[in-house]
Image 1 (cartoon, rainbow, N blue to C red):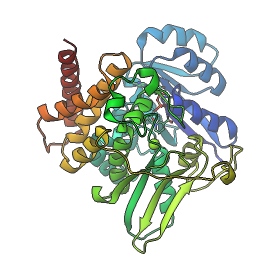
Image 2 (spheres, rainbow, N blue to C red; image 1 turned 60 degrees about the vertical axis):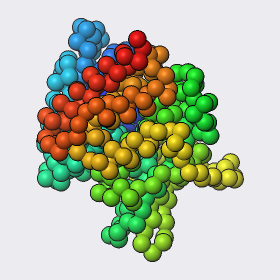
Image 3 (cartoon, protein in one colour; image 1 turned 90 degrees about the horizontal axis):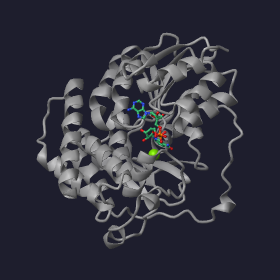
Length: 387
Ligand code: NAD
Ligand code: MG
């Protein structure tokens, strides 16, 4: 069997390294032909020495010489700078692009991959939050598959395999994060360290903070709308602290299909790479007796306002989700630098949405411009709050 050639954008991150775990366990099936990183040069070099890719991209130009001399023995092209992500996404011999970049930097490479006819395993949910309508339209036009990596969306996708029937509703499950059950008062002084302690998953810093604020679930509601072409009224969130049921589809006869398993991102990553097949692996299996109780709660959208903001943005349409996403990247970065409080993040998001007017003009350049404007506005609001 021909090996599947994969470009892993963001190979040094949480998803990227787990994807390479999958590649490592199926050396006859997969080949990591392209690796990219923003700054983590040591990990990137180590990965390139092990996987011998054809192309390596390092965004930060300061690292070019380090990468070049470390990879002198590897027969590969090395590109620096953001433009390299486009080369990576379009790389001729690649069969599938795994987009595991964090944030809106993932949008242009997704679009480039689609336009060059490559299927995409999509972890970068921000791509769809920013420009879901445009991206899904392009994917249809170029006849490429967008295979979800996000565990909830992989779950829905798996429940829909072989189904032609309409969906009545989907339930995205949420762990509730480290602050589940807390009141607004409890959250006034929470620290970066407390927010970074996720109960069930080890992930990159940005998505971990998003999970603590329930923004991650908000972004996922938006992601689900575009991936599965659903009206927002059909997308519900249920808190399920054990993270065993990864999400649920309800059909019009009342029947529900849930996809479940041990929480391990390598499972949805592997499925996106092997779809429609499943390959036997040795990952830990779920044991019912270790979890005699699977529980469910309603999400508290009064305390965790970001989830409500995401629903509102999705209902309003236009540029609202793009603005919310961009402002969120700024507030999360500021929270990680102790420049804004946990609850202050939602205040800044709300105010940014309020200050910037809606627009229905929705080209790729428009989205990139809204993204930029929203970042500046959020940054400005944070500075004002600090003075
Ligand atoms: P991470 O921070 O661990 O890794 C991000 C990767 O992107 C790194 O390789 C980094 O070098 C690269 N990168 C960062 N900024 C970049 C930029 N401006 N340009 C190009 N490359 C850049 O993040 P992660 O947790 O692996 O998450 C990646 C994506 O997957 C996010 O969109 C996240 O929401 C999504 N996701 C992650 C998980 C998880 O378990 N980690 C689960 C579901 C979805
Ligand atoms: Mg998820």
